[in-house]
Length: 317
Image (cartoon, rainbow, N blue to C red):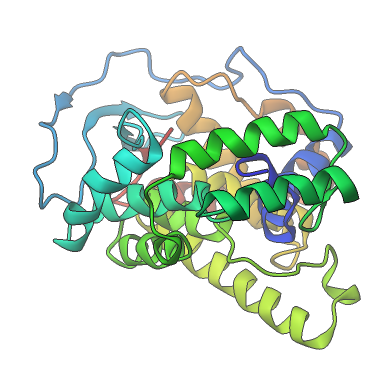
């Protein structure tokens, strides 16, 4: 349950698994050696920023400058991971709640992410025992099949201990906190809000949904596009990856080979400049074989436009 079950929901599949499936269909593997010429001169600037204050809305970060092979100078803005406080989730809740209530946007995001882990965990011992007994008898836990009841019980009891002390009504408010942070411009919240789905009965394919299910899932999909667009405009490298998958797959957005090429091309240059192992030279070469010369030129122009975003390029773990 918890962390792993998120990937079973339809929207997470559309955002993440879609790319993996499409990638396998191309018979491509990430390259470790650059296939494009990147400037070998060291970054002209490396700036370490101080830790955020209680009122800060910017995570700790470093900034480097690099020239990519299209000739554009980009800023590589590396953000520190926004991890929950150490210790039990309930202890983290007690620490983050007053900070979030005071308007600290980073704490709002961290609090929402923490509460997400407790959203399906019983809030009292009687409910816990009832839930454990139920999945031993039915081999089901809510909507999920339970293949290993003892492992499921161990996981549930661990999370119960982690979350013990967090009020039940607070646990279901995880999305409200993340959305506040996303609306305030926190990139991590914008990227992760679409993955922190509200409790619902989801169907895998929209065409197979009941009318009310389809309406709710289409609204969530529109929300995902909106917030991921905001993250891309704010310079998110992860958002480039997501849009590349969307345009290549044609499920979330209409298939657009030029946009897919442009996003993979921009992402490949950023990864080369930041010395990331995920490279897309073979994939791009395969796409070039299918595109007209005029479309490749359009894709290159669009890639330069994406890289010329003054907010580019924010790398979030």
